[in-house]
Length: 254
Image (cartoon, rainbow, N blue to C red; front, side, top):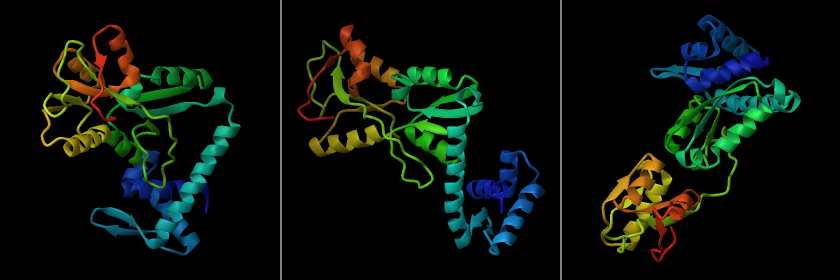
């Protein structure tokens, strides 16, 4: 048993088939099958069962995957600790939620480039639920999203939370959340779901809710008086300073 066999096993397990693993690893399908067969012979167990929708792990395969992923993480950590930062090269696929993209992402990318000058970064901005799917399908290497994720093969690193506050156009007088239109995050996002749940508990009826996948658009909608919004306080500062938004207290925390 060697690391190449384990790495091949992981790709087949994650993608559910030899053909897809071969394409991902840039190897022939016979080469992938040969490595899996050699690994099964070495361990004396069958690792996959073939079903209509592809290959699925056996009980022994599930156990091996857990150990193989631990080995994979250890190898990555060894490389990271022993390889000089200026020699690290390759492509790092990063996904970010828009709240982060509009706040400290540029500082992070600047520091990353300074430390790893040969590293190529591919960046994607999307809602958290899509970023999660991209990470779990191995189309992303690193994502910044509203988490944490519960999957065992994902390492979660917690960041300080973004504080939300209620904002409206400075000339708006009525802030009754039971009647005024509300500008919110994407319908698929956690803030949207938590906000709707809170509003439904506090008000018999609520005004029209406008979910938006674009945070910058949400700010502009609130600033133009279309409605009120629970928005990141840090990002709202410049709107408040320019007298395009004002904060208000709905009588309960957002």
